[in-house]
Image 1: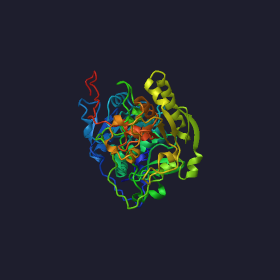
Image 2: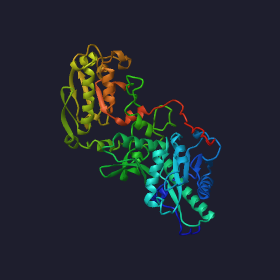
Image 3: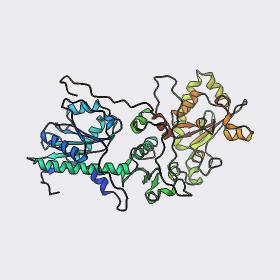
Image 4: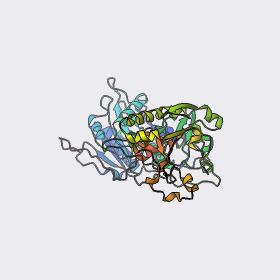
Length: 477
């Protein structure tokens, strides 16, 4: 491509940083297309229209001008949207802002672009304000997986050919970035990393796409998703030597009232793809070497790589009238659980009876899961067992049932010593899952797994609904 004139600037193109960070030994070959895509634009001038057309041509996409009279096509037919306009006084034009606010992009990718002329009375669209412009778009956009875009600052007279050339180069860089993200696991990897970032915000930094993979920062170390395993950089290149993260859809106790929202719903709406509503959220196909070991991610997350380290983060607390030793990070959520249960006990005789029958509560215990090489959540201090005084012929734990010579799989729910449903929900509202929902039941057990609450709340098996922009008074759609 020939050298472009100095008066034509393309500030802060997000895709260039992603390409530069790709390791030389990577086998990633980015897709040449962004999947079926639509270029949506509102043009205050001819230059923005030219840019939109050049992007559509380079990406093999279709064009949709919101100022025209054609109806908005079915958005489920597209994977990627490039959305742009001419800035008005350094801001997104009101018609485009209204369009974006009324349109649900159903978890497709959305990449913004904007055009501005250099004026002393307007906010410049240079690299210093690209972050602000991306932020403006991201706040308005509904339902999309937002990728930061870039702006075209035009100064003086610019040839149409130069505009089209630069717009084509920008689109090619965007395609490369999109290809890298798909090669790193696509929506699945993005969902999972954002899931953990939302669930453990106190310990983990935000989800960032870099070095051709989705990453999280913890204690100054970058952890790569590495095809389904959270691994530090030195291990990310040999992901097959580690077992994938085990995740499943946990179904929490339903709300007591139909109009009561799950406390995890907002996070689930932001993260979990509504296009992936096919039930069990499994990891994609991957290879594992014989003798693969678990990732050190959770041991690092809970500061429990050794018994001594784990012990140093435990603290004795009073919970429901019993002394229990737990990890410091779950003291606050346990306090909220207790406050809710005590409030319920004022009016609910079932809760009072359950509390009176409580024999003991145990927390930290350095051990593996029984009969397994996997570390128990008790070893982190992130689980509690609430054991009752009187069993009354009820079953509590599948292994205890099996030890009696009873087929534990045949024990119905009404023969298990389950806590009251409202008590279970009190735990789940604060990030604890209940062992009574496991196929191998453990009805006294609660452990802190907010990522599973978000994942389970985000399940949606109903067909996604598209919110179309209604017709305007002027007849535009």
